[in-house]
Image 1 (tube, rainbow, N blue to C red):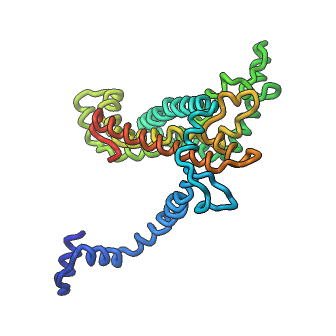
Image 2 (image 1 turned 90 degrees about the vertical axis):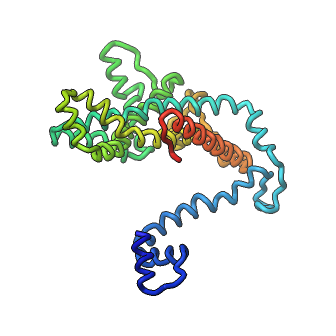
Image 3 (image 1 turned 60 degrees about the horizontal axis):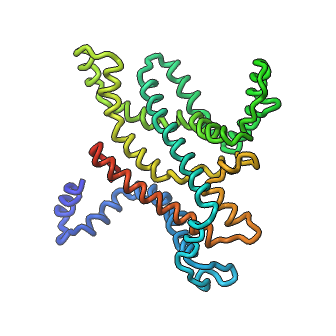
Length: 322
């Protein structure tokens, strides 16, 4: 495209046609595409870059009366306060366990679902499976937690009815600290497995059918074709998504964790996001600087994890995010 634009400019007699002029000529010719790009860039600027100005209160003793500029600098005092806090170990431990549990359970299953659906040739059955697995993704978090409370109710819930039929005491899933993580993770897997498999199905649709035809001629069965053609075909996409998911390892879903918390399971349900919400907004004296420091530390750790996993992926698999 660049050579066509440059040749056009040369034919029109535009001497000294440099890179900047070439760029503006491209923008004028494709202004519709750049107009579509404008709103996402504006959203990114307003909601991702402008708030970075307020991140400096993590290094200050922020006072609403004094404002950001007038508040006193305290350096790393807020970070040291969190690290030395008795809440540091349990909150970070709960967050890491929930995150890696969700990653281990929720990352490979959409790949397996996509590989299985891709092998189905019956159109109606394939569409039915996709619809059934996609639909839960569009249930809001509040509604999902409400369904869980009703389904797992120790008095009138489905599990209580089954336990009563078997002559067993009704289990209190939502009040049992040992069951909280399993309910949290597997309900999330059920909700998002179908939607997460869409991108893998899209990648599988781009694999050249001639590869499968040649494999069939060579006597390969379905499993061998899946292992040697389909799986390597989606591996680059899986590596990129794994790197991105690892960077969000401390970003446990705030709404779901907060809604599922109760006095009986709070010991294992308190994560970084809910703790920041409590100390930053719900406490009698909101501590904005302390809450911001915790959030900033969480983002920094996520950045380090992305860099580490990307480097490991490039060494082990020969490909990464960059």
